Image 1 (tube, rainbow, N blue to C red):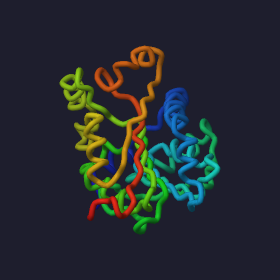
Image 2: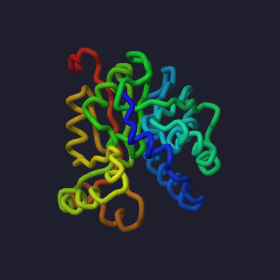
Image 3: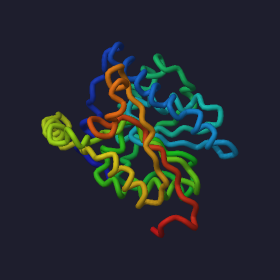
Image 4: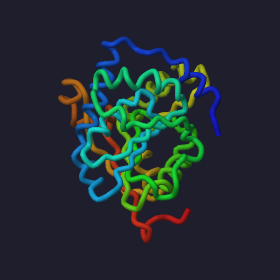
Length: 242
């Protein structure tokens, strides 16, 4: 299933200025550095096959390409033209092994273009909340990951208990909502719940950008939620039956 409004919106998305794009890429790299060594260790003795879903700028895919144990990086997005516009631009800032990144046009709201248990890791950068059915998307991620495979979602959209009303009000005024593009926001606990019921052991790794949020880190989870969702697919004997 392809979502026409989502694809049309991202096909036409503008390319940011070099300064703005540089800041965006550095933020992606900052989050990635928080778990890179752990992911690389998880990829030991595997085929090193990783898919970034909702890849967009391909920034995270380029970061992944530098992991010693990564072998094949699949950048998957509803808009192939956006990835083609952004890949070299992102590489000019982040570096990475651009030849390792294979771009694939696919709406991750539908069936993913991978076999059962084919992948060693599935990652999202500010993308999982765009799913029109987070339950369905995570069910597909569970299918394509091997037992013990890793799912990571960084820079997600989080509702904060102390600011939820204003956050939802702001969300309803975004250009994405006006264009009928899928935009969602969830409590951190909801993300962990969805991962758990779809066969993953999951945790939240706090990570903030900027001095103010670092100073207020005790409020991470109440006033704001910044971090990485890191999950592993349970072994077959532990997993739910789908």
